[in-house]
Image (cartoon, rainbow, N blue to C red; front, side, top):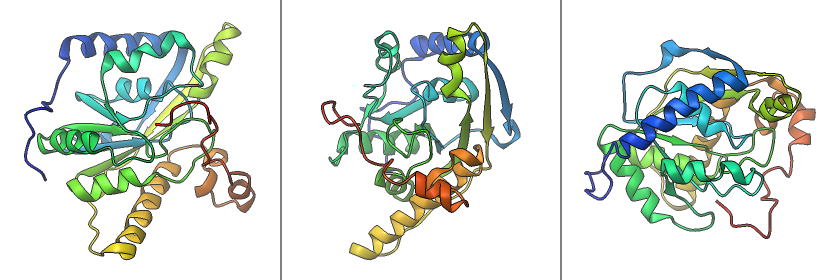
Length: 246
């Protein structure tokens, strides 16, 4: 584990995040019929990477709602498919930005420092929420797992896509959050191409753990059904050419 960088203290923003956590509790209580399965799998603390599927722009709200620890996020959080009324929330919470196609060294330093302090880091391996089935992980999550040696806690979110359609009908959405058992840590011993292949395999293993926690029809690239896998082809392509990627 890397030494602590004083620029990235953990935890931070305690007051505002405490208020936003309360807002997450209230919002999901009002908007959803929430069921949480697997609370017994929550470890006492970090260092820990919390990973989940990312189909809805309110997935981070659900992650905050079900985790008991101070939670940092690493991600893009560009939200071209989200209502303007909610795009302020990630900025107010605060996160370490990642930009697709760049090394994002600042975010890497931040993540390493948070985990070195025994912190908990939330990350969505797919790096975007434009699809409604699982896509392959971007390289960052495997790289971070290997680099830091942190254990990984998988979560699966079902039903969050229904929140706003049901709200327009005056009804609450049935939402299920499944929490899997922690796994890892991972090591990658190769170099060059061999290392890249090892990291890709680790990314796929992380996604398979997530796939086991969501509805079979949403498992996309990680489904056992060839028809579902075939239908998921192409979903990894970023669809907003005129919007920044993250």
